[in-house]
Length: 582
Image 1 (cartoon, rainbow, N blue to C red):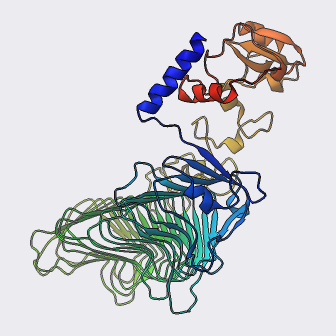
Image 2: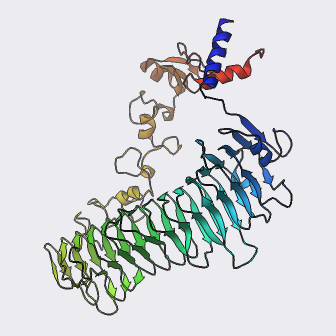
Image 3: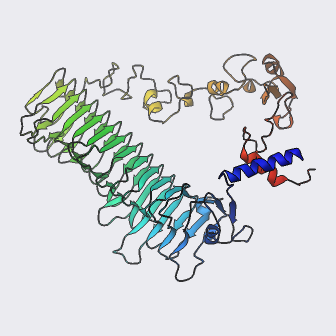
């Protein structure tokens, strides 16, 4: 009785303190849940509740007046599919939207979460945001086949205004208009999303970002789209990392930066095969940083005019453009970048500082290789009216046609100008580029799998993992049990290597094994290995799932087995209260 009284007191104090327990509501079309349609479940929910939706195709239950399959009229709740997006479908069947978030201008503290659905069949928007202060998260969803009733109209994968919109792991496909249209003030985060086959006929943004959204985009892929891949309006700073923008009609990126300290940072991104270049304009206080990127095979270059520009460790190769880089006015720094085999009308770098006397262009340790200028411009052309001097140090110019020089005025030291690139050693490993199997430092030229690419590059670009960090791809190292984890890493992860200690897990030594209890955990081992490790062996052939390690004490009070004693454990006890155990 004393324990029950204490339990009641704990639960009561949590409820009085505002820690109300969220409900879980189930939706299933076969009647096995609390509701058969999503809207009824949402209407019955409170802030923080979770609605679990069983597989099926869900359509509107609201009659001819309804403009969506369901809407969030009140506080933030989570609507999550129990199955995959492919089998849990919200089909608007010609209605305006699949889902609408009306929200509340006062703003909830809990986000609206939509997870694991396919949204399709709408004539305006897959997800329509019609509030102001809402927090909206869309996870692991597919938004596809959003098509207007009239061919001249535009549709949206996600459109509208909220305090924030976060999309993670989503696919947006076959939309005639915009994949995402983030209205002013909507803080935007896109992570690990794929945006493909979007037809943006008026050549605005496939992803359109209005003022004050400050987008953060990570690990996303654009491919086979029509229009500007990412169009960012003024009054924004943007961060783009580890993305791919490929094979699209129109510019991959366009952005306007204002006079204030706004910025664009692009890191680790591949931009290739697009019918257009990158355009960024801004005022004297704005900045652009491009680092560790690959920009290749585009019909266009990079046109940037803002306060400062830094391009570092970036490759721009095989592009076709009037000029590869149109830079200025402002302070510009290029370091350890590679410009190779670009087909140009003018120059690789066209420095247009105009009459701004304070700007500068500094180039350090860059490579200019095999670029062609149709009109015979120098590799770097100084078009500064103010007489600004270009500074170039430690850079290599080879086989650029027909002019392998820098246009005056310029200064610098340690540069090399060669008519051919036969002796060029870009990575300084003692192997000339024409026979080097990797653009990274690798004097040994090791290529264990014989694929023609050095092991160092295979590891660096993710072709092959190297779990033990010994610069040898795992594919070339011993994996005695064929589980995909090499022996060295298996041992580091706890596989026993005692009998004998030879770098090969004992499981692969051909000796009988059984359940071994060591420090409260059970693993398969030989009896000798188990005893040497100070463990208890259950006999040859014994499985771990039937062997309880003596002395292993579970966490007292941890009813849900998560390693912690908390409110959820109390809830488990309450849920089972009165049940007679076998």
